[in-house]
Image 1 (cartoon, rainbow, N blue to C red):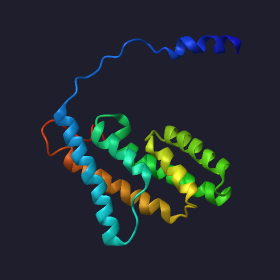
Image 2 (image 1 turned 180 degrees about the horizontal axis):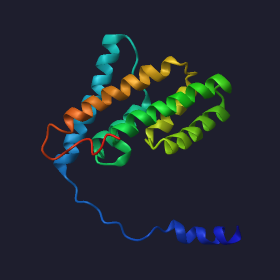
Image 3 (image 1 turned 135 degrees about the vertical axis):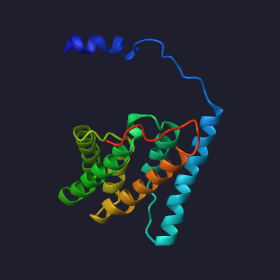
Image 4 (image 1 turned 180 degrees about the vertical axis):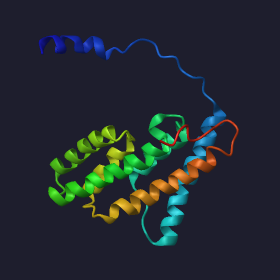
Length: 174
């Protein structure tokens, strides 16, 4: 254990200088417009249907879908699967343990584990688990807002990321 602790500072330095892709104003602007449209779509569907579809983790998903669409974490399997796994964990934790700090931390930790095991890692999923436990989520939480909202985000991403020449989404479905 002493050796591991002694190696920590060296490991925290990183591997070296990272090569940075040049900034593209075109990419940034289209990501901004697309992300705004995606959240607006969630708002409009929420108002029309009478079912609230807005949860904070969808803002983080929009950043991945429209700012880093090529990332493995932004692909459809990860987007939908990560949110579904995490919302299911949240509902189970609320049912079995309740909604206190231990329940929230356990839900996030279990979400990481199960997203990893199912190969659906989507960082905003951790927020979905957190939000679900904090909000006393019942089984309907999995369908609305989570599944419905993730599918709306996916539809907007499929359209806006493919209508322009400089993007392609997804890189893979499964």
